[in-house]
Image 1 (cartoon, rainbow, N blue to C red):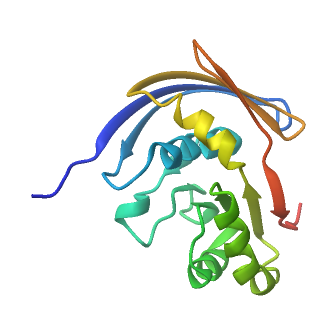
Image 2: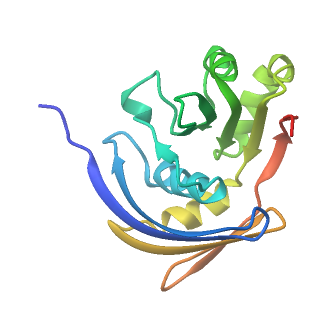
Length: 184
């Protein structure tokens, strides 16, 4: 018998001073049976970092043709494709061909270094690719905030995030390995 996903509800209040985006999102997040609390919280962090009224969670682990998150134009064109972890190089190249902007958010410490050493040289040619690292200690602290019903506030200023719940706060400083050079 197949295991079912666990449903998490999150009220995510985003105050992004860098992009002048302020909104509260009522999110329903399905946690795949093989998904860790760390990955779940990095998905929420990615949502906060790139929050938009059209940003959606993809099927992710259960569908190889969809990313963890994506934003589509009203015409159906993929504006932003967000992957988590260390995706296959071919998957990233394919995403770069399909979307205007691709973001990869790594969160596994030394594993991210090894992955980047392997694929970084060839992926550097993709001008629409951004690669960010979240320190593993930070991800562990975020995972400790994970609850089936969450109320989170996220303040973003100067590229730094402060994620707050009713009982704790975690500072997040994403490190950029590569930044897209997108046209204005």
